[in-house]
Length: 304
Image (cartoon, rainbow, N blue to C red; front, side):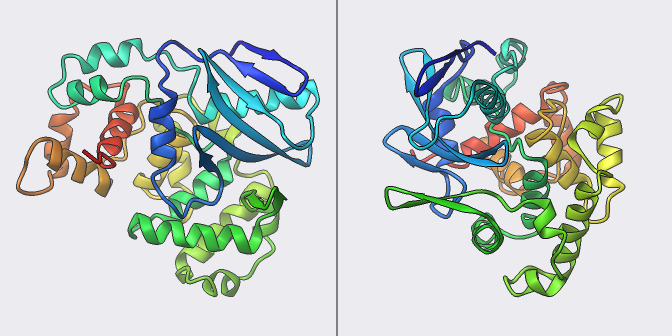
């Protein structure tokens, strides 16, 4: 990813197929979001780099992504780490040419890709955060999931206050690994989810479960199988994490309720599709199931 360093900011050159406004709209879908703030086109995010919290303010300037540092100025090496995070967050390395070529011939995706062109698959680069968020979201609605995440972050995360606004870091696995189940139960987590999250935190802390180890697997199916061997991670959770954190374009959370609702709306069905019907609809999406899913998710936030 090409980027330029300046005294108090840096610039990233995004790919041609990049719609910053569409990405912001998706990131702004919940007023309970605590890990970033959006204000008049600026996206504020606190990142921890070299054990130091760094406040980053992203904005679109001409054809560049500008990243300002209103508090402390990170070093060049730290800025490179920040660029890597943003690159993963917005999936900026992915060439979408083949996806759009496929979508042009697909009844379901063609109108969506035309409408939302340039939307990238917004990821969750932090592996522990992606796993916890996926587990939080199991079998509950999105509103309550955000409520639980907010409680979790405010109770166990770090924060920095700048000009009257608090910015939060997601809790570390090292912190969560020290907890007892009742600590999470007090936040209204179920017992099972509390156990799963603490166990995963311990596995990450002791090095048994890492993003790099997953990436060493031969292919998507091998990564999915490895994740599903972990207590609390089923097929949907594994696909969600592979899609959002490992940037695996073949990941397909086929049982996702939101995906089913989006297809029901797009196809004007009188009921949600079955898994068998889902496979028929997705027969042309091979290799791009994650992007097809994400664009269908985006359609759920349509206000018009």
